[in-house]
Amino acid sequence: MLAKLISIIILLSNVVFPCAVCYGNPESPMSHGMNMGVLTLLGFIIFILLVVAYSIFIISMRTKKINNS
Image (cartoon, rainbow, N blue to C red; front, side, top):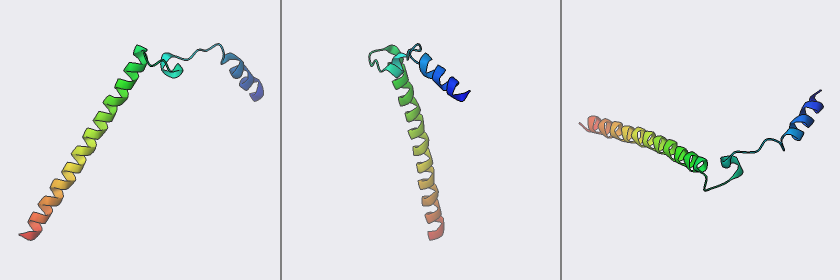
């Protein structure tokens, strides 16, 4: 049964055509939108990591200031 299912999927894979992103058309609006989405999410991640790093730096500076007093 599993072999029949796998063979059907392989035979039908030629019927299903990939989208512009999967196919690799760099000029398509879908590829451009996907790239902008990835860059936007990367920007959010970088921003959050910078906020966390800044917070750790400020906490360590305050701790040093309290310990030196």
